[in-house]
Each structure stands twice: as C-alpha cells, then as structure tokens.
Length: 437
Image 1 (tube, rainbow, N blue to C red):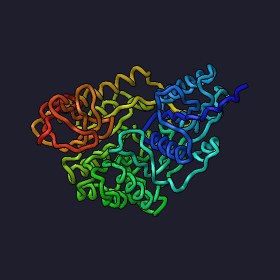
Image 2 (image 1 turned 135 degrees about the horizontal axis):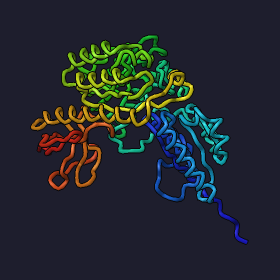
Image 3 (image 1 turned 120 degrees about the horizontal axis):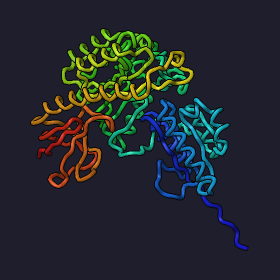
C-alpha cells in the first residue's frame, strides 16, 4: 500500500465591508505568511482548503452579504471542497452566540481583536517584528493606514462601538515606521482611516494629535499624497486644516461624515452638533483652503425624520454643494440607542429620499466637473480597464470618488505613476483627459 501524501494547507482570506476590514485582512495575511503558512487574499484558485471570512456587520445589506458568503463556504465544506471555515470580523464579534447556534458547521468564530487566537488555530505565533509591515492586497502605489481602532462616540444609529470596542490610537512612532516601510516598497499614497480619526491621540497623549501625526507622516520620504478619511465633525481640530494647507503632499481632501442636515435629527442621532455648527465648520475649512474637496455621507430615514426634516437636509445639500456625497438609508440596528425609537418610515420611502439626494448631488457634481474642463491636474494612475488608463486627482479617493479616464489607444501610462493631465470632457462622476508630455 502506498503511504497517503498529506496535502499542505492553503488558506484563502475573504474580506467583506470597508477599508478598515481590508487592513485587518492584510495584517492577518502578513502574519500567516510570516509564519510560513501558504495564504492568499480572495484567490480564484480552487485549491484552498481553509477559508477565513472577515465579515461586516454594519447595516442589514452588509450583514446579509456576510451571512450569504459564510453559507456558500459552509456548503463547499459539506461537499468536501474545503476542510475548514473560520469566521472573524464585525458580524462575528456582534452575533457570535447566534451564529454558533445557527451555523454550527463553521469551525470557529473570532471577534475583531482576536488575531492571536486565529493564529493559534494554525499553530502560529503573533510576530511582533512584523508590526508595521503589511502585505497589500492591491497595487502597492496606495495603502490604507489604520491610525486607531474602535470608537467612543454615542451616535444613536451606530453599532461600531459594540463591534470594535472603545477608541485606541496607534502611536505616531509606529505609524511613521509603517509609512517608511510602505514607501520603501513603492507606496506613494497613504489613506488615513479610523472609526473616528479626529479623536486621534486623546487616549495616548491626552490631547488631539492628528495634525502632529499628519506632519510626521508628511516628512516620510517617498510619500507623495496623504489623504484623510472618517473625520468626525464635532470637536474637529482646525490645526489639521492648517497642516493640510502648509504641506504640499497632504491632499486638499477631507472625508467628514455629517450624517444629516436637520438640527432636530442630529440631536436625535446624538451627534453633539447642529446644522448651523456644521455649516460654520465647512465654511471655515473652505475659507482656509478654497480648492478643498469635501466628501460627506448622509443618512436618509432616521427615526424622527419627517418631511420637514428631510427637506432641511435637501436644502443643506443644495446650499453646501459638497464635492463628494454618499447617502445611506437608515438601518434599525439592535443594541443601538436608535433601536429604542420607532422605525416607522417604510424602506421604499427611505430609498426614495436617498435617491432624491443623489439626484441633486449628480447635478452639483456635473457642474463642478464642467468647471475642470481645460484645466490641468496631477493624476495617479490606478489601473487599466476597458481601453482606458484610470487614475485620480488629489481630490478623489480610491473606489468612492471621481475617476480620470485616459484613452489607452492614444496614451501610455504606467500603473502607480503620476502623470500631468489636461481635462477635455466631464460627466457627473468621470473626467476625461489627455496626458501632457
């Protein structure tokens, strides 16, 4: 009889949800490979026998997508196509007991801060020498950098503190070290992310130090762009805008989720601010940097949002003319403060309101893009797709914002390079341009 050959384990990590989850998956991937384990991220090969699903538990649609993915791989396990299925991330943190009962075929569930426990399943150790190093799951020219974990805010609609715990900042020293490592490996753009980036430093240094962090990162050689995401508006540190203005490699771009344009709804949301204060903040930022691109997100259909409050939000969007806008419909989440309120607005009404806001934004975006025709911009090339090289200006973040399309039949660009582009045409969400020699 021939001895049976033991097949070596191959791990595939599947990521659901936001860029913060992607960073967690990249850290896990780096630790597994650093321990000599054959691991990949969202591999298309069929020979992975261990699946780790990093789930999202933020809103209903995201939860359903995560559950569907778990069930898909559980079915593959039952058919003998995979040996083990592990589940981690926000959904697992929030609903572990229910998931263990409902989907017992999963081999183990882990929370959002249990990386060492996952590694133990592979008889692997958490390697401290890999801190600051991270294998990227996309092109190396840009990288998300998570500057803190968790959130201390009491927002009524949000379950993030339940899933991610309280706010914990990473030290400036650790983040600079990570940026240096990234730059040495070809990263040109850092996208700073957190659950609440404006709170950065309060726990570690007893004061807000986001501006100091951005200044330190902007000193790292090789980093051409630094982009700030998830800046909470209440208590916003204006010294961040001063640093943005003084440092050429900090993008004139700010992602600041405002969530509503009615003071009554903002109070109900427990945001600690008013429409007037939000407008004053945006005006102050634009006074300092008139060319800044401001991205925000709004929620349609929060409890207490009647027709009058919704109209206030419509007026707010029309007045503020945000360069970038995303709109979510309210999701009634267990164990949040808003769950104690009546969710009486039908889903179709919430969706109609969200669509109406986005129709207004389409026109605003179209008008702003038309003004760019004939102007020149520095563009970072992200990919080649459908006969075009696709890039972004400093006013646009990865995947969520406008793109610059360059005809690949006329111009050759290298992914990861900066090129100077003259804009020749524009639609609501795309710019078309010619590369200047």
